Length: 160
Image (tube, rainbow, N blue to C red; front, side, top):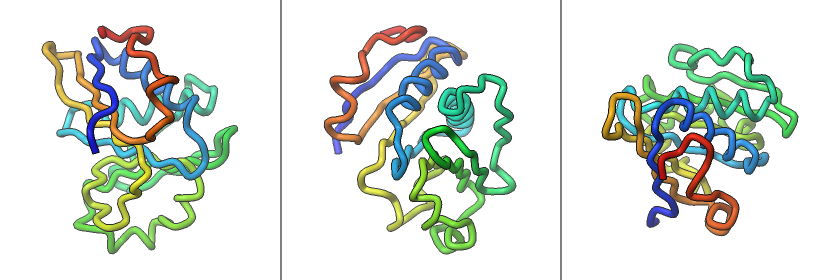
């Protein structure tokens, strides 16, 4: 699957602006797969997404690193933030309520651990370090037909 859109994100505020824009497009059954190395901004993206989707900029969004999943009741329905870093593969997903979670909006850090359970229709957001310490590059792949006309290349806080 080829990239749909690559964006230079100047700082964490730009990452949050992108997350808010995608939160407005997300709907139950969607999966957003957050890829990138440690420190690339996956958790910051998920936090900003959930705050925007909830309409509460102060929403507490703890990292699911140790719990593996956190759930949220959003106006659009339930959302689930998975951090699969500590899983070796998809075997433990049943215990985390994977099938039920797929009915809501899922944000998944370290989606390579999903193996064959990786949703084919997902939006993959690959975050990579940018040219400066605070900048990132985001490559969005997926959601065919949903992004190009609805996600402008220039968003508030984005470089390009």
